[in-house]
Length: 263
Length: 76
Image 1 (cartoon, rainbow over the protein chains, first blue to last red):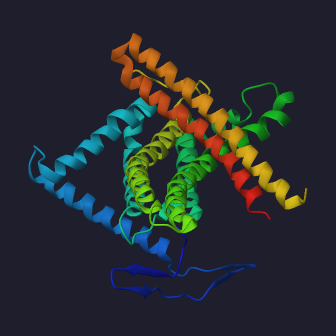
Image 2 (image 1 turned 180 degrees about the horizontal axis):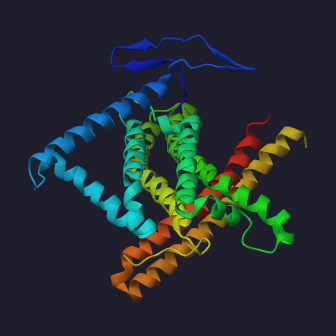
C-alpha cells in the first residue's frame, strides 16, 4: 500500500535507482522511480504486449479463437455497452482512448492482488494523472463537437447575462469536479480494500493469539475475492463515467441528463 | 475534552453519518432497479447500467465526506 523505493520479490529485494530532483522555478520535483511507478510501467508494458499479441492473432483469422477471443469479448463489450449508448455513433472515434484507459486501469488494479505486487492506482498521483487525461479528453470532445464559441456559450448556462456572475463560476467548477471525483473514487476504492486487509491481518497482532489467525485469514480471502470484483468494476466505472461526460459534450442542444439510450 | 479527542470523535460520528446516507441512497437505488427489472425484464441491461452510474456518483460524494473524516482523524 505504501510507496517505497524498492521492489520485493521471492528471496530478496531490489533497490530502485534514485534520480536527482528537478528544479522548476520554486518547485523541486523528485522523478525517481518508486514501486508504484515501476508497476505502472510494467502494466503499460504488459498492456502493449497483450494488445499487440491479440491484434496479431485476430488478424490472422476472421474467427477469433483462444486468447484473441477473450480480448475481443472485452472490446465488443466496451463498444456496445459503453461507447455507443453514451456517445452514439460519434463515440467510435474515441473508442481507442476508452479501451486504453480501461485495460490500463484494469491491469494496474489487478497487480495489487499479485503477491509482491503493488497497486499503482492506490497512489493518488497516478489517479490524478489519469483524471487529468480524462479532463483533457472531455474538453477536447466538447470543443470539437460544438466549436469554441458554443463551448464558451455553454459555460454561461444559456441564461440572461445578469445571471452570468453566478452561472460562470458554477459551470467552470462543474468542469473540474467531474475529473476530481473520478480521481478520488479510483484512489479511495483501491486503497479501501487494502486498508481492510491490513486491519484484518493486524487483528492477529492486536490479540496476540493464534486463535485469531484462521478468522483473519478466512476474512482476508473473502475480501481478496471482493477486491478482484472491485478491480474490474472500478476500471469499468472510470471508463463509463469518462464516456458519459464526453457524451454530454457531444450533444449539441440539451444540457446534462439526456443520454441517448436508443442504440 | 481536549482538541484531539474531539477530532477523533468527530471523525467517528462523521463516518457513521456518511455511511447511513450512502447506504440509504444506494439501497433505494438498488430497490428501484429491482422493481424496474421485475416489471420490464427486457430492459434489465439499461436499468443496471444506469444503476451503476448513479451508484458510482453517490459513492464519489461519499468518498469526499470520508476523506474529511480521515483528515480529522489523522490531524492529531
